[in-house]
Image (tube, rainbow, N blue to C red; front, side, top):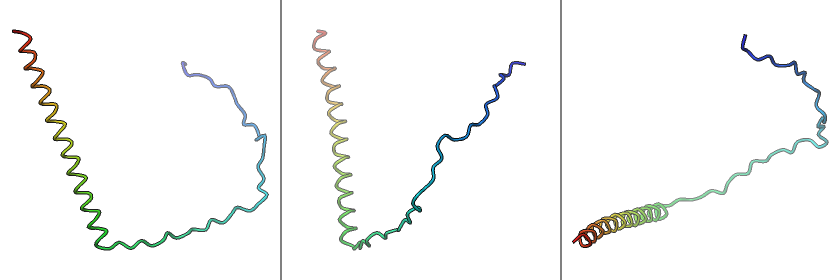
Length: 83
């Protein structure tokens, strides 16, 4: 009863039909150059990863300590202004 009634919409033929003039190009899969990974490369990647992780941890600890110091100073200054 309350369902909408859609008008009949016939499908129209396409206005432009595409006719390829050239055959499809054949895709040639090129192989990537081989990469040799030795023990020095693995060690360098691991050391740099450890160093970057340590630097990130140091920045996080510094940010937390600065935030705590700011909260403490703020509370001390608030107590000083109340007197």
